[in-house]
Length: 241
Image 1 (cartoon, rainbow, N blue to C red):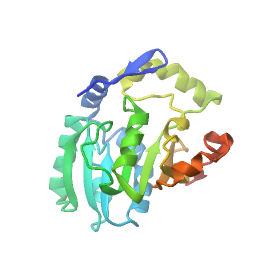
Image 2 (image 1 turned 90 degrees about the vertical axis):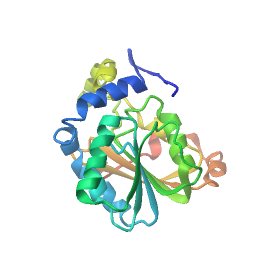
Image 3 (image 1 turned 30 degrees about the vertical axis):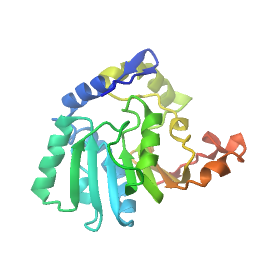
């Protein structure tokens, strides 16, 4: 597996850092960060349960989301951390989740699935963790079927204010904490075949945002005709949830 690195402030994050961080997090994840993001996860899956067909959850972690999926959805999950994945497999067994078809250890930047394999692809609280978010976005688009949806839930940093100051202050600790405090939304908006259709600011306190994209291959040609002011943050206005 190629180890990819990306500079973050004065730090570098790579797959080894991510695995080490989540080895530390695995025993306490459910009662710490898992509880913090529960409201956002629940709201996202309520939206996904209105859909049909196959689901790929990238960064399934300890599997907290798995019991919430509707039984008519056929779910596959992947994660880079074997420690987190073992907990997810235990949760599937305890809850007898027959609609969870597969859980695999896999790098989100090199998904081992055919093109256009899934009707819905979701990555919750993942993009700030991976070494190369742009590559992961390309992979999410690749494995999503035409007309399917790619759904992200993530923290996006602010340029100004107290929160922005704190994010920049702790950015050099990215290797230790295992995620990027500084992560602008523009890093996930560049995929030519994904059209952003919905943005929602999620609890708690709007710290996280849900982005919903539709895979629309013809959109790539349309984007070339769009003014630059519509391609970035100017079109990013989350709705409060």
